[in-house]
Image (cartoon, rainbow, N blue to C red; front, side, top):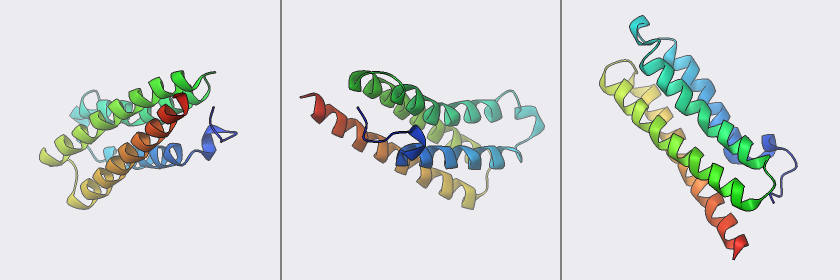
Length: 123
């Protein structure tokens, strides 16, 4: 299992948590009519990443952790798409778009690295 004693020590969880905080801040500026649309979707997919990391971390096996890290990676891709959509619709400025895009691309890389490391451990 992980070398970390608590999920809050995991660097990719920390990155994902900080990114979600930024998502909530940025989406406060979205149009009111998007509250049940894009605002809700981007918040749910963004918060799903650290939530899946936590759920996998709290499971008993490396195999289960990997499964939840794959789920987190899927949510990361979904969130990145929502960021692109929000920007293209004019809901997000270029600075926030660039910052969030970079954050989520970095999170995806971190997840891939951890997944690959854990897969090697299973061999």
